[in-house]
Length: 607
Figure 1: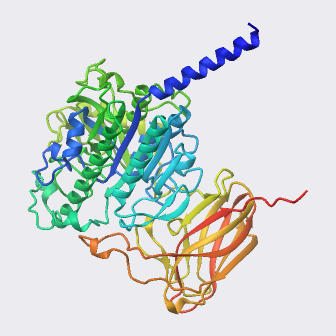
Figure 2 (figure 1 turned 135 degrees about the vertical axis):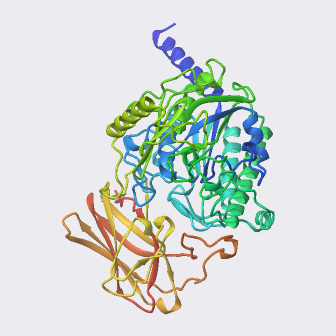
Figure 3 (figure 1 turned 120 degrees about the horizontal axis):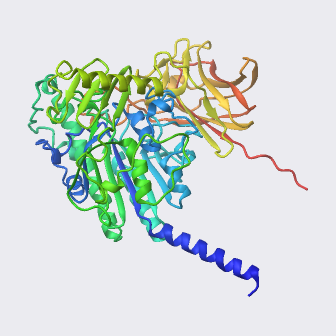
């Protein structure tokens, strides 16, 4: 046999073995809900709702009894995606760019994609919108959903699919689940392992509930939380709406699990279920202290269930303290994926050995482990027994889960030790104060992605222009009534090019004839070039789906938007500003929802 032939055979066998390894790895589905607290499940004793599918899933695998996340949305997402504390990665806000984690971080999507998995994310990304922060740039082959924080319309809303603006189909949670089911079905047909991240955006407000689900809750009596502090001042209709949305989530979890059964892949599929923070209202939460935004148990304790019939026995109760930072290393170990190539050491620890019966699950395996949390100047540290908060309060969680008693004076040595460790962690990770944080520009024109979206959320208004709501994630600009008014976007053009600009807008009939102009400026404020277009078509003026709001919303309402081409503009690489003005204004002016910049393909010349 010639040496070259032998080499070909060896290489062929190697790649055949590698393909076999990939094919036999388990599939993974991670379901993350938004503002659903630990107590929003019938499994945890809530008498006000029924979540049979989630409860059954929990009993069919492992229940992590002391699982912790962050007090609010985007930090938890950053920690799950990277296995590292969000304070290390530049996350300091839930909006306007402060939700983005540093580009040097590798995500769970990156690792699984590199290992040969088909990867997808469907839902609320909330970790950056413009590439390279976009999910398609962070390891997910397919993305459908929205990249901001909260969303203002849950019924066939404006969404995006891999950067393209599109319209949803029906109630958003049903729609997102449909996309996950379709992806699973297709990947199963391809005989390729899949990783599906399903970050659902309810029961986050607005409390918009489908009529058929609301009918089940509209008059339902509500049993309050046993702790007076959690029950006092609760909004019954808000609670009803949240629980109705939780039951809708349970329905969709049931559909997802049924899909695995239908394709006979339930045994070899890992399914993870957890929430991003405590409940977004005063409702049943096991009596625990705090809710969303709090660094106490009620704000950061989350349900977490992991079902994997091939390797995890039923009704496994894990009492060790664990957190969102542990999911990446745990899933990687279960799926035999190398995660050594990270920006820095992981804060998370794999619990695969506990899940598979090779280590104790009573908390004795890592007696000195600590979990830290920080948000908006508040911080706390959790050991297997204690929780110490930055205000000096010490609670014995094993004896007092609801943190009713401050025992710092009874255990001064414990309090001093945990204070020292919390101070050391804060000093090491250096959380950013969002009140003094320096803003980072929004990237435009990534060379690997044709589309960049700049929503009103990321703009700055000058003059009489107002934002539609104080919570910016799903807002639009209005009162654009003067030629001196302007909307500015602080951008960093990653690669020079010519970009077609589309604006999604709203306009009353009186605004027809208004001219919108976009001008580029370099970092020195020198005007580069501009393009403009005139509004010729009005848009519907009513707000969408108001009747499905079950309580008055804090967030702004949403209109039906229309797109218009504003022409094209060449932009050089580097930092600069896009400035929108209205040289001609009619009536009440134009409402601006977002811009989409699309890189033009280079012109080719005939030979």
